[in-house]
Length: 307
Image 1 (spheres, helix red, strand yellow):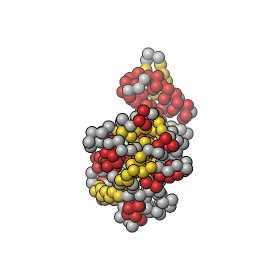
Image 2 (cartoon, one colour; image 1 turned 120 degrees about the vertical axis):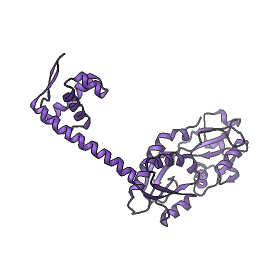
Image 3 (cartoon, rainbow, N blue to C red; image 1 turned 90 degrees about the horizontal axis):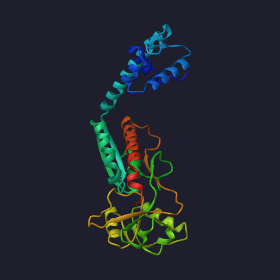
Image 4 (cartoon, one colour; image 1 turned 135 degrees about the horizontal axis):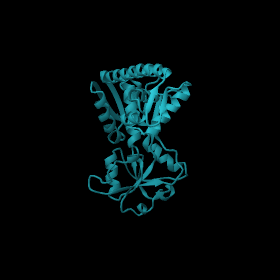
């Protein structure tokens, strides 16, 4: 049997109002939508709940009276459950230790944290930022309850939850000749100076994209800092590869950056949450994971689309 709370709610409203039209106004639904819901409910239960009289409203049948009485009880129990669920949510207290891949942190973590502390004000958040190796070590050494990072290079034995895809794209100065194209091949970039994002794992990933195509990038400068990379690219010293972009196209010095898609057939890395091996998640960690998924999936296009 497939009976929904929505159908029960509609039946209870019709019984109270003695009219499909009046119930539709109470529920902010169309009269045809209310009637269709009643048809579906009666079909599912195999009984007639209401005698419908055009222009005279409806009268409830004996079977309908029994069904609606039970529906009212069920709906009241559900309302009580929802109220209790809200209390459970706000009763969460304690601490969560989050380790985040440093370049990812300023782009996505503020969105997540704002929502998290708004829902769970009694939870203390401890944030640790670092390289992919450092945050994995924190997880292994029980210094973090969850890590937020990319999946490339992540240990295969670590449990993970995929939040969103983060395709690799090209970052260029606005006046760079290559910026005239909407997308670029790695073969078109290999001979150009590259500003390499020199974070552990990340650098190996970006270089591997060229090597898989028998190409060798011409690295001009290596930097571990995202903002330094943007300034060097904006100054016209070379291009770079990244997976996420900030919502602004201006650097500290006012250089305007553009992003271009890669035309090569690449496997995109993903943003993931990862947890300790064989550890049961706490309610706080589960709540944090839910908000991460909601916030990152809702905003990810702002950070991945090339212009």
